[in-house]
Image (tube, rainbow, N blue to C red; front, side, top):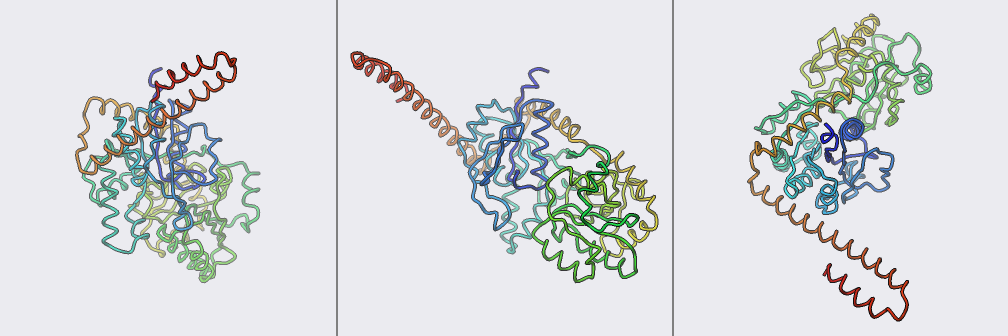
Length: 459
């Protein structure tokens, strides 16, 4: 057990604070729980100008990047970093766990080849939708997906955050096996304190006794936001009393706000912008009577479990990844993917607040999964992966791209050794120079002879 506690795992991803998204939050929680409960975690992510990693209870390795935040909201990692590979080696890393099949996966593959380390990939997101939104050309979309699949196929073990995420991966052409390894929630069970709720939500017109509907996440149309707005417009036209709060921001935020106004939802629909403080976010979950999440894009629906932690039930699309493990009317509400179905459910629940409360309590009991439990499961599986890798149970990577990654890994390893040697040489030069300053002129000649003898070890 003592040896297991010393195990070091390197987590790699393309996003990390101060750039926040769901996967960045996952990596933070993985690393924090590994450090607190199991062993040691390194996090390797692209450099972000102005980032301060000093508050994290684990080391963060920043590799070079291009600042493309104005174009896509993220930096673009340059995944050829001998310094990162050297740090991974010096830390005694035993396993690499990558959370994005793009730049960080390329870096992970090189390190894996150079250091002979097992490589695990977690598939979090439906990248085909992201790629389709970013690239218009069908040919380029197909090429981008092929590149992602090459990175995924190169991993020794593939995890998905839900069964639906695994099936999405299969639809892209993945033919290997995958393991479902669910993400956890970093919020404790139970509502936020009343005074905290009042402080966070008090600036908004949320009358007592009027149902408050809530959405938390990126403001992107593919999250089902049009379904929400159209359903609310129907309710308002019928004279129903409600309030709607959108917490978050995103690329479609301006269009979503404009549409809400065009539908006549001003005064009952509020946009808070991004809320990064987790306790403030917990206050919003606690203030909501019902969480609305009609998304078929998300592979895990972590926000559904966050809402459940605070005793708030969710309306979601039947058959979606977010609805896995949900029984309609018991621990959540499942509807068809259209505004009419959502409007009908909201109409019914507005007249039955006790039903919302009861289902919210069941959600807290049945859907909640703590990060401690989630990482405990992952840590146990890490041990099996390491054992399988060392026993040669995973197929050997032998493709053209694998050969390239192996060569790149060997090059990075050589560059890393050269950099280490250079650093040691300069340290020796500084030490010898300090020694020279301390000796008398009469001994200068003897010192110089000794100097060149010592320096010869590095040349």
